[in-house]
Length: 524
Image: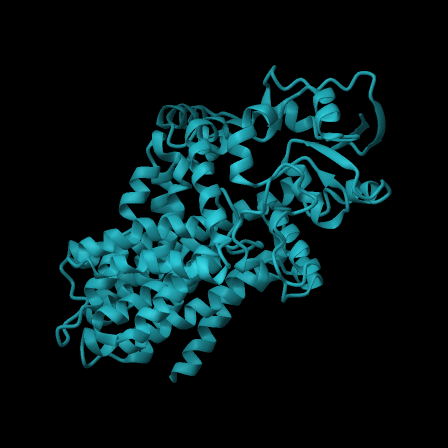
């Protein structure tokens, strides 16, 4: 088999595992709608990100990185509406090709007799099917519009380039690494945190301070490429992390129950005692919020590759004094500290713990392929069978979860609301309760919404705009008098589900102008 054929096979698997599921099981992801709004505003501004997103009234400036949205703006909106997983499919396809070519290049270093094409194909297929990249989580990844895959691609480019430079590849490798890291900062806030954790960890593992040069180069590059605007992004991210530490990690429903073993065991006991659908849903929710269970479900590839190298002593490398094997092993181990740290209650503000291992999947795929190529045939068959069994479990859960999401919140749930809002005056100041309803409809309407994503504004005004995220303060007159709101969109079912007496949005005396059984709209 040629490398071209192996690449075509891997790309086919990428399409089957990303593009098709994203078209079959669709639901309106909140984060995706926000990115579509940024895409719209960027296109209206000549493919330059405006300094403020005009429909979002509660921010001082636009402080979300925008390189992904410039890529997104190149794709037709009709394609994205029908195929929301198209950008992730393209980006993961590019990263799969990179992983394959690196595996083919490094195979002779692992052992001269290894078939580079076999190693490339194995690495590509392992990457393409990795549950860490495909399973639904707190935020979207493989099947929605999201910058996460591009951030992971650019971090991989940075680390592959740095590895080449450290292995004697010359200044070109360092240049590629610096460019990849700079663009990663301009793509994803989380990618910045990954680099800040990974690079020092890998420098320690390599017993060399040289990798640390990547961090200042990334900052300088991002600042230069953005004409200084990245410094505002970075400052807002710092303030937002501070707010997350003080409030959001305690307020946000998706973070409050992280790793609550007591609640999980009680829920599991209720299920075993014959509890009904509600008990099973609660147990599933708590299991999904347990980072350690998610690590096992999503990262058999990473854990297996690391264990094979460290515990079993299986050789990753044998060639010519190359540092490439050590660099890949350092990459494998780099997620350990941030994963453990963000699994602790006090450090949840640094993001979802299970996202950090996603950034090590390229290294895990290459190491696993090189290890499998060197073990005896019977051991290779056994390891492959065990891994396929784990994939069946992980992807079985993933399919069930995607189907559940698509039924619970089907595409089109906001269509009636959107049609109504399009009859209202352009620029009308609108409050959404909860906040994320505004993000869902903003990309396809022309209202101005009392929402924002500016970390600086949030840090300064959080207590004046939220009871707790994503619930605005309940005094509707406050929103009318301070911000000029003339319309409020409410989703009563979500308010009732919270069972929180502080969430009392009194609409008595307000004129109802539209409702459809899910949403209610009142004039203020």
